[in-house]
Image 1 (tube, rainbow, N blue to C red):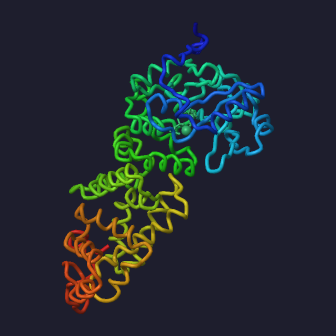
Image 2 (cartoon, rainbow, N blue to C red):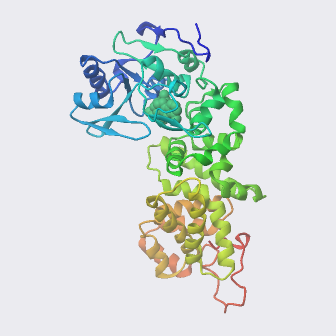
Image 3 (spheres, protein in one colour):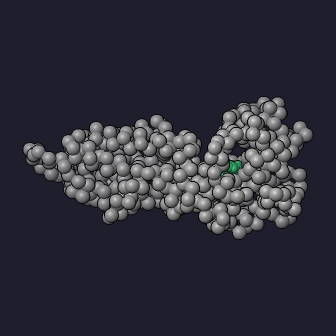
Length: 449
Ligand code: ATP
Ligand code: MG
């Protein structure tokens, strides 16, 4: 049975424990406590969203989200360790040490709202501004983004409730928007980025009707608050599938709406130097995530913004500005333009600027300053970034090798190395009196950044 909007108004298909692979053993004990306590309080409670999907896929869920018919205030009364957060979505966070179980009250979808209902509002373009109208489970399903994200797991019989065919879609690894894809993307353009993120992360294909609008709706991202885009970009690029996510963003022409300066430079990048650096940088980031090594937002943004930063640096340095202030200025200018699209917080831009300003110190391979550089707190990050540049032809390979060797050498060898300053590039060159325009060296002539 369907109503006029094409929605399936039937009861859910209930997948019994014997027919699915979600096991309690893989569910956080704290999440189970929350489900039980809500149930005992007389409320419905389900695990929902990414955790159910991930459990079916045999991935370890990042976190456990709970959906309930209890209002946030009712949830708060049941849990001492509860905090209410959010404005656009009011949510309860239940704290267990470092683990947070997020509890969301079922929400109604938008077309059921009256125009004057201030609890749910959209702008002229259909974008949802506020969404705090509570509903029943049957309503909650329809406001979720993809069928794979709309599966509800209950402790009552340990079954999965599926209103939208998500169970089969997970089995077949298909990402399908619930409802009319274009309308849903217009309501919240971040869903387009989520489509890319999940397709990359879960190795799902996007079904045709959900995929088609992606190519044309990138401009809607301009209306998303830049801070929200920053969060989404971090989720997308620091979860182990950065390379694939990047590929998909480009494929769907979404990239230009997120990183216009980068895309402009990539179009001019005839020898593919910057593309190479970017792809290698993202691949290394993915590798580090796989190896459980720390990854930082500033290194990621250095990788994503290097092409325009380098371009701006060349202009400033070529115009006579010394390398360090030229780099600082270049970072500032490029970041400032980028903020209009994605707000990059200071905790990212400050170390980003520091690390890139250090790049010019790799040109100095002689004397005590080069030895001291090895102990700089940002040396390691700067060195990793320099290696990326070297492997894409943006920095002298021999010079890069010198910096690798000196780190491995003992103290005596280090001093010797710093005396002769081997390794090609600026350190070896004899100083000549500077001629007019001598600074106007391009990247091809020795990577002076
Ligand atoms: P992960 O946590 O692995 O990134 P997730 O699917 O759990 O993936 P969350 O951002 O944690 O993603 O959101 C939890 C659930 O809330 C989703 O599974 C989805 O059902 C719903 N949801 C989140 N964001 C949106 C959105 N923008 N539009 C519609 N539903 C959403
Ligand atoms: Mg989640």
